[in-house]
Image (cartoon, rainbow, N blue to C red; front, top):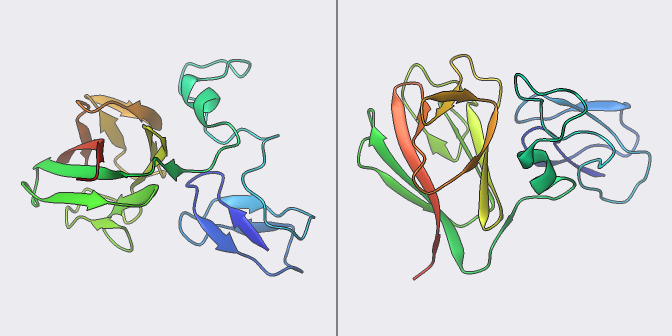
Length: 175
């Protein structure tokens, strides 16, 4: 059986006769296993995102409305473009052609040697032409335009700070 982590969107397999709750091998979030034996996506009856500070439990954030029950999907003919503006890897650029990328010190799609960056710091997922950033419970947090966030809808001009590294992320057409 395959699950998709409700926290970091990572797909992973679990034994059909597994325990009722299984931890994600990437972020450690405990996802509830489904009783059905067919492959499933995120459980639409549960919230996929943590409430932002200050939200009331009855409110639904813009991020939650945008991705409710959906899995990351990169618009055909596009790629996620990451440019490092400040930090040890300043000037490095990455063009990634998959719907979800992870950033961190180890075991990530884009690895940073910055000691202020957690091993599994954050993920950026594409939902067609929209990019969503989600902090994975990092020690020092993730900032978008100088605001500490757990999750955010990204715009092309947003400056993302993880540790001492500042980067910009955008979607662009493959040339």
